[in-house]
Length: 485
Image (cartoon, rainbow, N blue to C red):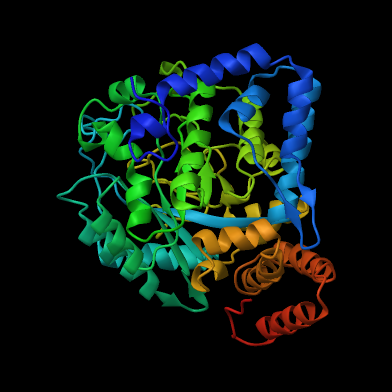
């Protein structure tokens, strides 16, 4: 049997089944050990320094103990510390993005996804470059600046050359005051050379969901196609980083396997990236299995209720304090509202999970024939932006770190020292002002500029505050855009 080694490049060693099972046993034995639990909570709490805050994070064993503890008072402490950590490193900012589905042609047999090869009644579609231009214009007209492109795995229909051409097209579209400034990529595991080509194309974060870390379940859930290769899939982030992509995003599809196993595996994967590459995941996503064309989530026995889902999210925030955390429109407004307080730092808005779902459709029209999963939060981007502000969050359309080279270990060093707040807070206010001026409804604009005025006063450095205020006046009174620190 393989030994656990977080520095190994072999999937069975850095995501080691024996270590996960021992971790779950350890967590079960210690879930009522209040002395140990209080030590873990104290370790997780952010500590104030001269320059900001520092957090030690938690090991997969420590975090698993917290997740296993059923004491309601402990859960409330976990939630409070998760909110402390989120505010310490990300403030009250929430980054906004949208998915863009390029193609649903796929050769895999994933049993939880309607794009699987055996689904013969779903409409198959692949966007042309002209259709992509139209989709991008529609997204720009909504106000989006950051996209996550999605595509099924099909070497014939969706080769890497097609993906690269799509990225080039997206970046080339300049419509009115609209620009897509960052393209994140969520495509199948590939080679170091292809990751290098993606990096050269100017992508932001490479995102790949593990789906499940339980190898036996993984093989059953992916019975056919290249995705069946568990090791190749699990080792993809190492190849991506070898190819020069220093911002990578992890995630499991909660509901496929028992959640405590998945949680431990996810934290172990983050520990592995830190141990090998010196920088952990840029983002961690927390999707749950949702109903889709021929998919019934009730068929999977790993389903989790909303309270358990919230606790998982909070425990991830304690374990990996510096990572961005993403929740999509898979979840309802009510669930998203709660999780925003527990560590989430990025949300999608006005999303369509169908191929060609934006151009030619009004905000309340949704094509379903090529949809990957049901969207629970179907509000428009304007409604999401106003909702965030009314709940004390700054909607941020900022992409400055990526374009200023603050990625990978450079971003993490700034984040860990607390210095990133000097950039992110004013950048969020300036990009929000762009949105308010160019795209917002009158009601959202009124709420937004009130927030901008209040938040400007909170910028601690006089010079930064003065520059940000001056740039915001420029945004209001001219067509100048894209100011950034």
